[in-house]
Amino acid sequence: MIKAKRVYDPPEPGDGVRVLVDRLWPRGVRREAVDVWMREVAPSDELRRWFSHDPARWEEFKARYWRELDGNPKVEELLELARRGDVTLLYAARSPHNNAEALRSTSSAGWPNGGADLRSGPGRPRRAEGIYMSPRRYQRVAGR
Image (cartoon, rainbow, N blue to C red; front, side, top):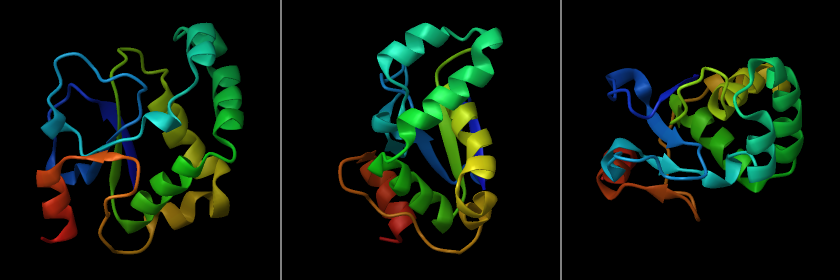
């Protein structure tokens, strides 16, 4: 299952793998609070500035953001993490209209099989090339 919540909210046992999907590291957040940092799935600076968390632009933002993600290899890595277990997408924004929520809502509607494959299959997330995963979390998740 894919969930979304603020990176400043305390971790919970049901979070699974905590994936930060912002381009910039949030202020005051320790590396241990995040398992994986996938800045490559964050919206472009141009799109982020255009949107500016304006609720009136929310639907258009989601459509443009999804077009940006089309063909992005990091999206497949995120899908792989989700196939292996629970994933919580983390964001720093105060607004409920943000890229993590757009990813979460689009995952069930726009990804293959209506997102059904995202919620199935046991397994363990692994350290994927090019993404940050805290060593302590990696050992716990990988069973080492």
